[in-house]
Length: 93
Image 1 (spheres, one colour):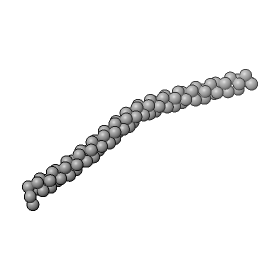
Image 2 (cartoon, helix red, strand yellow):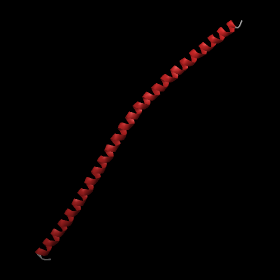
Image 3 (tube, helix red, strand yellow):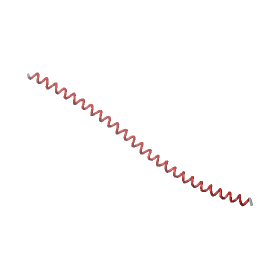
Image 4 (cartoon, helix red, strand yellow):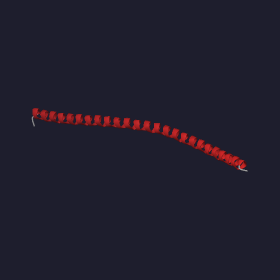
């Protein structure tokens, strides 16, 4: 093979290698962008999870507080009912 032919073949190989390198770089940039998007979505999900956990803790605390208040009201109503029944039984005599 003559020198110009070898040079043309070498240049053709170089161009092909550069094209492959450029394609690989584009794929890498796309993969990095997708990974960045996934990481951002994951961070948003973590923030949502943390917020929901705080809200759930608050709801559980409110529920427990309401349950305690409900029990106290039920106890007081039972005492009041007994007191009223006692007063009725005394006045009926």
